[in-house]
Amino acid sequence: MTNVCLYFQVHQPFRMRKYNVFDIGHNNQYFDDQKNKEVMQKVAKKCYLPANRILRNLIAKHDDFKVAFSITGMAFEQFQQYAPAVLDSFEELAATGAVEFLNETYHHSLAFLHNKDEFLDQVRMHQRLIKEHFKQKPVVFRNTELVYNNHLAKTVEDLGYKAILAEGADHILGWKSPNYVYKPKTTKRMRLLLKNYKLSDDIAFRFSDKSWSGYPVTAKKYADWLAPILGDSINLFMDYETFGEHQWEDKGIFKFLEHLPAELKKKGLSFHWPSELVKLEPKSELDIHHPVSWADIERDVSAWLGNRMQNAAAERLYSLRKDVLASKDAELIDAWRKLSTSDHFYYMCTKWFNDGDVHKYFNPHDSPYEAFIAYMNILNDLILRVKGEEQRGVGAALKRWISA
Image 1 (cartoon, rainbow, N blue to C red):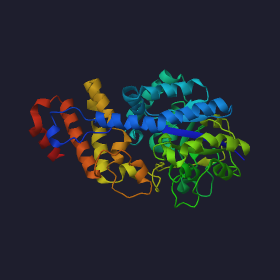
Image 2: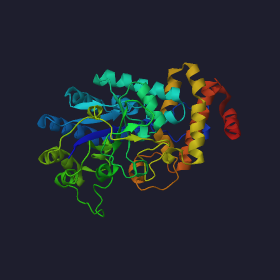
Image 3: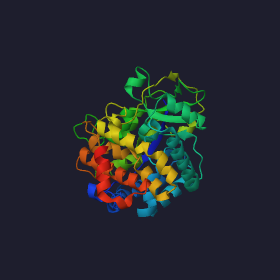
Image 4: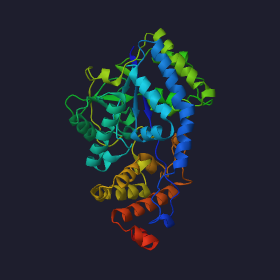
């Protein structure tokens, strides 16, 4: 018998406008403010506000209830702009002392795979954000999309973190269990905490699936599933939008959340934060060379870097970093970093995968090709701005775009 580590990811990207070639050199408004406002206010009403109320009630009712969050800088900024009550509610949760906040990249980017300096800058930005709003200095790191490998573990340890989250993918575990604490091969004292993806996805993806053999999932049934499990921790990691947005309220997801702690307590199960697992001795070492993630059935990075469009877009974006930062133009730098958000590359994905319907919520593009064209048009306008060539207009922009 073991306890439960409950962790939620909170993120909303700044979605791009349908930016066409004739905008290049004439329009610096890259993001769809109206769409972003609509989505944030919708998700706030359906998920963030009601789910946070439930968590506050659970904390008041159960002295052993603990939960962890990672909230991206992109979500924070949209809370501030479009739904300030959501930010207030998260700060109220932080004040209870029952909530732990983890660090990640501020812009929810895959910068670690492309530019280590940019990765470090975004991590430091996120550190400052968590300290400012929640008065915490996290010791646990969660990389964007749970992308992880040995090199990342060593980098994060060098930054002072004591534990890192990753996907408990079958191809990295083999016969091993995700319910134990492990040590990354390349580190000295770092702890590796693995998501139990089967039990997590029972809630995140299968909860309302009537064709699934486990349907319907009640808190009592779920507690029965968890009770016999042996190990250090049952790590349930998922998007917070699972509650009320991906799984709608009328499917019973909020009632499930409300009753889960009581049902787990009946089985002798309690909760702990990721940071409390740092003190445990690792079961063994894990040696993970190729990046693993929590996306789709492959659990790799092909959802963001699996085709020529995605790789071309990423290469072009990061090739601009030096010139963008040298401009010292805060607005330009902010726009460039918002373009590093992983969602933009996800929208260019052309492969088919089982959980795509959930992850493609609020996709502003009609096709991956449209997403790529709009993205590259924006980068070409950004190039003009970096070089101070806005006045050259569409002709110069087209020439650059064609030659690229």
